[in-house]
Image (cartoon, rainbow, N blue to C red; front, top):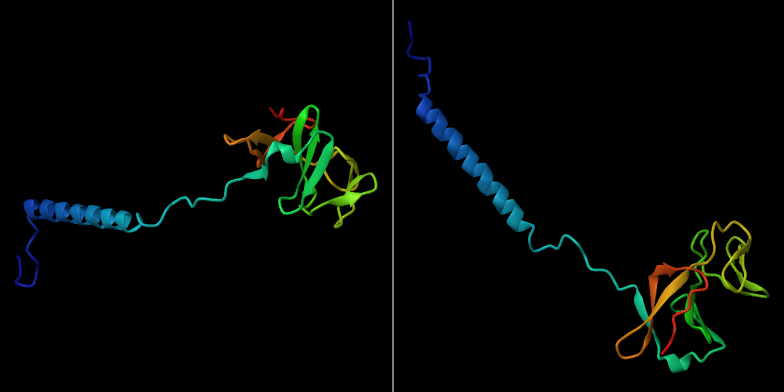
Length: 156
């Protein structure tokens, strides 16, 4: 016996209609949430790792020049131009010039003039960096791209 206080059963058509409305509401909410995130970029641009170091005439063969603001040493020979990073491979300190190469002031790693480890805790040699030439002839160094030790970029 059904009483007056018992709810009426929900017809199947009404149930499916409510289910459809709920699905549409969830879809619209998800779309609005996605559109609200559009103005903020997902990937932030970072500074380029390629830096210009100057025209080839500033680096005549047989010279070496340290660029402390870029933490590199530019070596120029008859074979071309090369760049050596001055960032210690142990903990990232900036190495300074010593009697026979480079010395890390933080933990005492020592490197020869070509960047090979000759003492201390540094796990590997100083990296040689990729050198290239821009369209206007300016020499560029990619501080994020390593090249094999002793690799010189031939300057035209």
